[in-house]
Structure formats: C-alpha cells, structure tokens
Length: 141
Image (tube, rainbow, N blue to C red; front, side, top):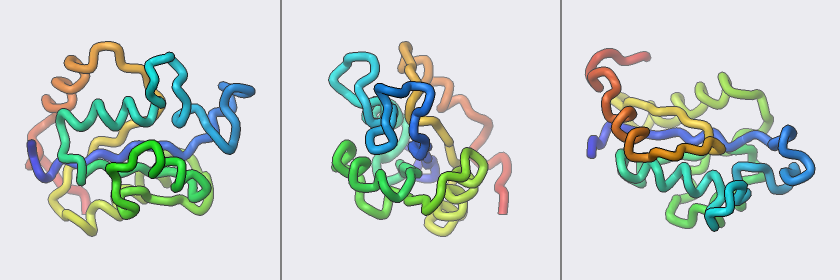
C-alpha cells in the first residue's frame, strides 16, 4: 500500500431524500440501508481498507455526528474524524479534508468518496482506484 494515498469519506449530509427512514439524528450513511448488517459508512470504510492504510482514512462529518462516527468506526482515532461546524455541502467538505491532510502529508494523494454509495463489485472499484494517474503527476498547494 502506498503511504501517500489518503481517503476522505464525506459523511456530513442528513439524508433528506431518505426521510422518514433517515433522520437528522441518524442520517442514511449511518443506516444499514441494504440489509447487510453494516451501515453505508461502515461498508465504505471497509471498501477502502483494501487500497489504503487505515490511518490514512478520514471521515468528514457534521460535529453532531462525531460520536456516532466513532461508534460505527471504532478503529478510527478521534483525529481521523473531521468535524464540520456547519453543513456547507461538497466543496467546503473537500477543501477542509484537503487542508487537514496536506498538513499531515504534503505529498498526499487524496481520494474523496461519498459514504453512502452502494458498490456491488468492490474488486473492480478498488482496481479502478488503484489505476489513478501517477501519484507523482501533480500536487496542488
């Protein structure tokens, strides 16, 4: 595994389109939507363990869901959960993750992923992630 590969899982939404199943206190990424015994967040986390060191996986979520994130992913250290004080959608979430991870590793290559997608062929997905352009191709400062 490449020590410069990082993953940011976006888990800050409230899942309004899944209402009433998804609630503000327990959004869809924290639910077992497909009946696997795992939440969407847990499934996404495990999917990336095959391509990235666990210490390089971060979750960006709203501050009210930090504890729920740590309950569902007890392997994470609290520093791997990036708490947003306000929901400002995708771009600020990605910028926040980039800023935090660049401080840890200026040579990091970041994969940003929603935490609530269903991926049926995980092996193909993982191979696609690993086929990314050269990790030395360019760096954004």
